[in-house]
Length: 625
Image (tube, rainbow, N blue to C red; front, side, top):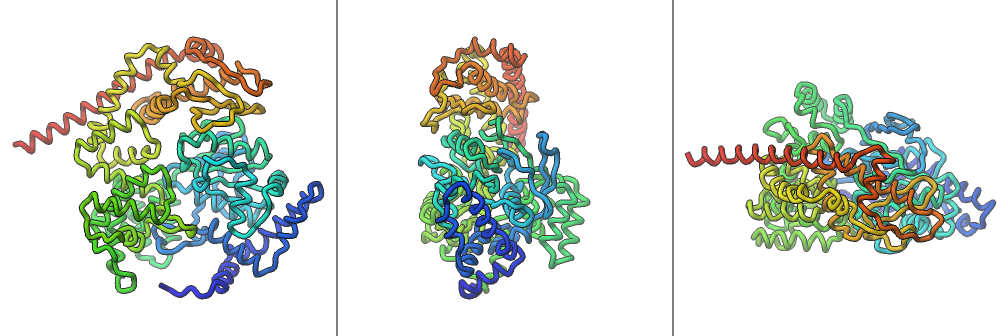
């Protein structure tokens, strides 16, 4: 391993970097000024004294900030962290709000400050990268003190509030300021909070997480930005939340990223650029930074140009393994005695099991146990309990984060190889998985399902959609009122309830406390709402709008019918009353529209299944011949 020198030398290198210079010049001094202004009204002198630290201590803190918030790892730089400023390409966001319609975030600007900005992006679209850039721009061109929190690291089963989380987070990097002082500082109007990864919070805690994030503005008057994948609970919250969408990359963006990433190999730049400019099927897939990064790394090894997003992921593991073989004289040898192909098998199985664990960060023991179990199940008996070590060293697709935990270099990689594992299973095992998903959907596997559809749509249609069709047939036979009762899924509404871990949805209007819906059967409501909104978006022109309106209508109904003066109110919600209300207030005949949607969805899926079954039978006939 390369000698990086003493800790003091490393810190000096960080501070002397471009980003380090900005950190040194602005960040802690700015916090001291903010705290000083707050101290005029509130006594926080102890915290002010703690901010007057010596230069050596200050440099240690700045180095930790730089490493944790302003560095990242990419496929092209998988063996080491790189400065966000060195790899960032300006990303564009769009909004329907009055604040802006379209902004490209570069070195000279940032997002307009708003109550709660929900930054929405698909897998690999650059949400966390953009959040790091916004954090950096706050330091360089803003006058606010930025704070970044990774939501996946919070234990939502424990009680806490925003100042407590901030105090704990910054204590880890050396800023030991009490929770009560942070409570005043974040209300100063000079702090921006960046919450990363709402979609990585376990589903059962998301209602609590929404209320927690919402309190950033409602309770502490502090603007914040939160990243998430599409269609999570925070995106449907309304009220103080403004949704902002990350745009797909355009061809000029792709070429710019190529030139920035492969700056030392003009010949390869020319090869990649030509492929992008002359192959429309290829360029149409290059819509996100992660795909472009994989494309740059794997293109030399591909036998043909990719025509789908899954094509990029398919060669990634073996490309990294082959690259290791070329460099093996300079790197550690394998410790498990497994071949690259066997390691890939173990990686697929482990990806599946880790997706099922509903987490994105794992202890070393968890990683070790999962890989060892997978090797035993796959009869890879010569793994010596080191398969995970080999995969970490050879591919860097799983990396340590410096806090005793590990994570995939990108969540979508775990999801893709989980999909591959499912498709490698025997037909009966696949049917069992799909049937289980239909009857008890698990949001952790949603993107896995999309990958399965893209990798093998025929199998997706014949195995998954046929199971979904059985469920849909049962639902179609239900009386409309009974269906609505089940979709509503609850009979009481609790305002300002304490225990919200099993809440179905949250609805709110500006200036009122959140209305918390306690689900009588949260599993069933989640099953139906989840399946209809996601699957109907693939196979119906209605795209789940009727179900979105159902949820919104419930929110409107409860907020209007309940007295906000009451600390706690209970309301029985009857389907008949709801239908009258939604028709009167929203001018929408839900009873008619729900049946239209079900009929259209059923027929579209039935045709898909029939077509795929016919194709499969034709291939079987040819094989028999």
